[in-house]
Length: 208
Image (tube, rainbow, N blue to C red):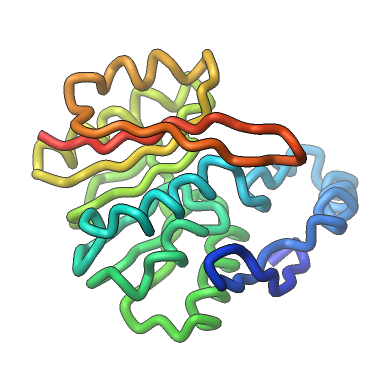
């Protein structure tokens, strides 16, 4: 893994390995000097939507209790790690290899026998993983990714899967949610404190 990780204690008595926030920028600068195309590790922090989704799942366990759960674009994977012991089976996935390596480290840390990490990119995903519930946190940030992600969501909805989305209330992501309005069966709003600023997060439960 390219970014040094440290064990951090979060809320709900959850301790997980995360990239050292103080070293991410310097590590990235070193990698950038070697490879100008090195992508910035946006996955390497806990985003407000991830925190909101974690708390939502704690408050609404029926969506993941004894279910087969798939988290896509997980990054550090806080929501999945928060509810891992409640699930029947759990797949925590991301398109970034370093993120997947960190997820594997946390799976070993938690001694989870029902979970696995997976390298998965929804832009080329073949919908091969069965799931009762899919978790999506802060995924509607790039309009060019909307179409393949919507196709994946619609495929799983047709199979009877429940989709739970947590998203910041940003303008660029609004059209993505509008395309899914027909399937939204439950919605909620959470407020997450991020560097002394309140961030509003919308949460949606979708199913047919």
